[in-house]
Image (cartoon, rainbow, N blue to C red; front, side):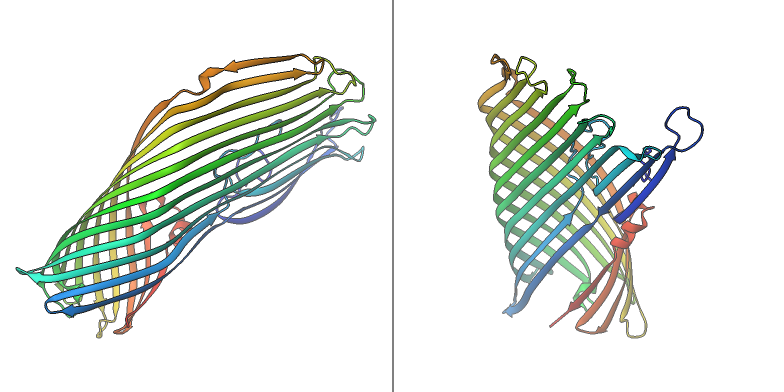
Length: 486
């Protein structure tokens, strides 16, 4: 938060903060060093992230001759909510700051008050209320079969799940200012605006996965998870879904100027701008996963693990795209005489298109870890590890216009005349390509306790090497888990 609005932030972080700042100035002639203007700034900001989720799992396995069969059912939901702006809003007219992308929800008011004359020369205020939610209910069913053969454990998996992802954004910015001059009868100089952005995006479909793996155990332990083994595997996942993405942007403003002289600068103006876009179509995602894992007991109570995971994600979405724009400006001189200085301007534009979006993503993950069990009963365990990840992503987007109405600018003047201009270059088809890559390393560590054979309690955390100086991120990474075996 910039408490005195001097261009530099005085406070950072998440949470809620409230501030009132008062500054006194010598702002009037003869500038004798005596304060004659008081500026009071009140601000409130709040930035909160909430993650919610739950899951219920039923898992069982049984033997059929020399086959091991397993079935796992999962139902749950995960979601999150934040109150940061998802895009820039506001015109930033005169002293108004407007909203930048990722700004936290806020309110702000400023009063500039003449001490000797006992009146406010200027008052202005702004507020932003932002909310984005993600909701992802799911159902998953997984069936597995495993058979020992040729000294290996050969396994096959079949996985079915639902896709029901919904994201909603509702951002609103309001701002305005007003000047005062009590010595002028009827004086008015005020401006106000509002800017609202809404978005609803959803995916609704199903996914089917197939997997195979082979595991070779070379050092058997009392618990299967502690065995010394080598495992390699492969899986393929196929998703299909309906895709919807609708956005709307509504901006409106109102302005009045009257200086009390009846001069030519007195006017009233209102602006209403509306912009809507929509994608409605289908999509598919193909995922290929290659897995290798190596686990070895070093000495009693100490186990070392190493893995390698390579995943390929390919997504294609094809939609019918629509866009509509309508902007209206009403300008009127307050001289009581309709003439060519008064006008109503209307701008319209629309188009429909076939749009194709393609994403290609590859992820290489290499985890390394070691576990040390101590105490006589080996009920306590220390765990340390690191996870290296390299990500490469490319995006392609293509839009082919099917139908379009040109950009039409129509002005109707107060004297009854009008003009109309057309710009047909607004509806060009296009194709775009972008790519990026990045890598990061997480350092992980934790403490585990097995009070009984059926209960395991773990405290886990990680340390992101890219945010090594952010203690808040470190504290947020703490996890507490309870696992009960029935």
